[in-house]
Amino acid sequence: MMVGEQMLALGRKTAAQLATAEGADAAFLAGSIVVGLGSISSDIDVYLVGAGLRESRRQLFTDGVRVDVQTLATERLTGLVDRVLVHYPAPGGSRVTDADLTVAVRVLTAEIVTDTGCLTDLQERLGALSLPLRRRVISSWARTAYSAVEDVAGLRDSADRLDLDAATTAGRRALLAAGKALAAGCGDLHQGDKWVWHQLARSAPADFPLAEYRRLMHHDTPAGLGQLVSLVQTCLIAAMTLGWWEVPLKYWPDWMDAGGPLRRAAFFLPCASDEATLLVGPDARVFRAPTEALLIWGLCNGSSPEQVASAAEALGPLAEPWNGITAQRCRAVLRELAAAALITGAHRED
Image (tube, helix red, strand yellow):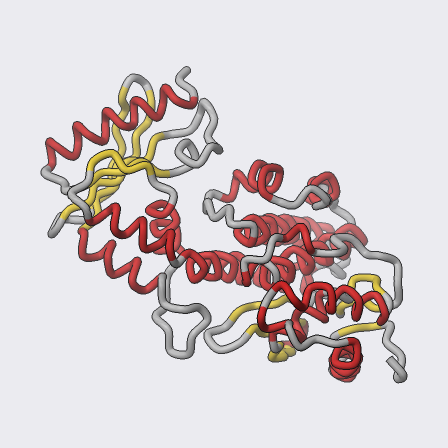
């Protein structure tokens, strides 16, 4: 069995041979092996790029290793990168499919084998303006998580055990997607979902509750589903606040319920739209969340009003949109969140 550097060496040799044989202008390796996540069962992903090439995908075996070969036209790859690098979210911005996101991430993290210059240029552009790509990846996983949590909300109270099994499956899908969004918020953009455990282990902050994340992934009771959705909320909010502005997630104050009175309303999740971050919850309730409101709402994780204000003020200097947060402003936002029933445990005087 080949591992690590052996597979990369085989991939380099295969990519160079294919590029020469098929007249490609460039070839690169991508996927889990390249970003340090592969195993002995991983395949090798080879991309061939050239002007006017007919796009195709095929598999072959080399020395017993499966090689996935994808051919892309330079024009399409260039256009894809152009769309990805548009500021996100942006009104009227070009839509980028999840498949396109995967290709963009692969170009960013690629090992270039041969190139006439175009591929290096695209990789450098993505590296220099990586924030739009990061935001698109976070948002893609947030949409997946919301769809799954919506299923959990609709199934978890059923008396039918089969519905509870379906709710458990949906909950695990939501937690996986939230973990991927969190990894992306840490700058670990690889799209393969089966590697979420390794990505969190290597990229999440040291105090992230990975053991609890793993426990909840295997929990199958209604109470466990509630705890699972709460952690999904926290992962997504941390990714869409700190990670959104490239602030290290080590500054997130509380990953688990801190035991205080303020809590986020259950089953609401942040979902980025083209114009603003939306909080979407049961019964099709939707609220627009300005940047500071999203942060303050996220900090209501078993916290007191004083703790929320203190944490918000501490985070304020780390990103421009939060620079104006004060304790007084925080109390005003808490009142607005309470009036909208987006938090529980708040008193009128808070």
